[in-house]
Image (cartoon, rainbow, N blue to C red; front, side, top):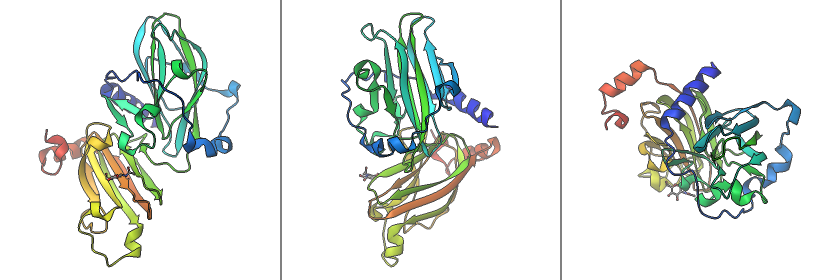
Length: 320
Ligand SMILES: *[C@@H]1O[C@H](CO)[C@@H](O)[C@H](O)[C@H]1NC(C)=O
């Protein structure tokens, strides 16, 4: 079953990924302190003994969802390659350079991106990521002497690479680490359930499902509801803390369209079928409260998709 999902997923990635000019970020990438994760670096690092590591070759367009060592060897000049890395929602990914034989001066590069890029769009969107965009790209050629290991902020990361000379290449070790406070998550599969919690932090988090899904919001609690039950709040934005359901075709959550907002004044349905390529549950948190939302989702079948298409009033994803 899992294998089928992965295959479907990989196929989807192949379809979606037109790697538009994003493969090299020119700006000089001075390495800054990885504040966010330094505190659990030592404790939660699960070292897998080298000899037990899973190993396989890395393809020019690849999807990696397991820990292991991945070796790329160019058979001919390969100028636009990308590997999509993915872990469980409560994990982050580290990429270590093992042996690298590329010609940086000749225009080869290996760049790790903190997130995914598809069709020029990024996940997490710049708005919802703790780091500025330029810090999310770490180029091997700029940083080899400084940093041999790069860690993602969420359960997805990406490696862009270009190797001109046949026979040249590199080996990467990919590891997963427990993330005690997941914020942005890209779902590995088209079905599951999830509880998102923002513990009194002023930040926004997104859970992205890149499939058309039926989604059930079973519970959401935004602190102020309990504290000020009598307060009337006209719209969700004024509420400061709210949950958004977004939909659209790209992966940048800031470019998706709002399907509905859930907040104090919310009284609509919490069960929805969304025929979009990407469905996102986004929580906006003012930092004053502990906010939490639980939901479950499953893939829409063809018949359901057809029905949504016919009643396209219900769903803007088929309107264009
Ligand atoms: C969270 O999102 C809201 C609305 O989209 C925005 O006004 C606010 O500035 C964002 N907060 C942070 C910390 O990015």
